[in-house]
Image 1 (cartoon, rainbow, N blue to C red):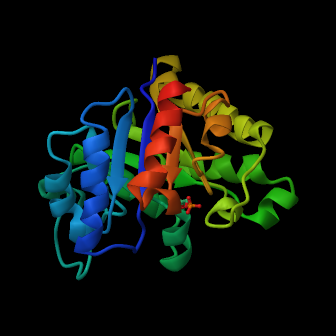
Image 2: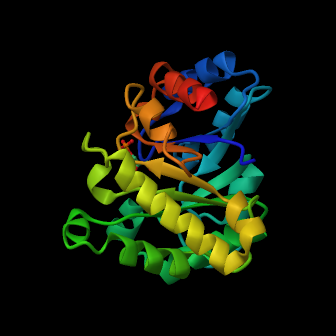
Length: 249
Ligand code: 13P
């Protein structure tokens, strides 16, 4: 049985004032039947951890460096995130692949560093609209999956987020069949590479325009173990019903 996971990616949004949203979430979910992770900007990780203390809400980073330390001005290591109170870190989000030219190999190094530091890596992948229209989605996913996921992956240290680029921040959502096809494909590939035990224990999240009103339909799709939520995770009032829908799925 895979435990469900609701993850929020705040991206480059939020200063100290938004910690009230984490406090509100923590009040709503002192305990929960699902895992809840909020990934705020790095500047807020420590304070977010304090705001969430004693609740079911845990905190994650949005990126990490592949090395543990060294001359990498402006970067943050997985160890530092863990030290600041994070339990998870997102790696290979399409915005980082695009804004910072991160390739699969880079993402794999970051995910490995996260796992070595004792964090769970939420490895993101997804096709562009052009790639989907050219019927290349599964090829793209196959390449990102084999290239971005380290060999040391387990059901505890790896989460995969399927995020079609064209669905991020657009209000467009793939059909349940389209999500199911990709999630089923990822599951089969994980089982083939890591064996049935590990392959079946890795959680697969869907991400891209998940909102309170479409969450239940998405969570009903086979092999969807939760969501990576952007905009709708910024306010507890929007994220709470998504968490509730996941708990009921
Ligand atoms: P939205 O939920 O805002 O579409 O963002 C999805 C995303 O990129 C989460 O990582």
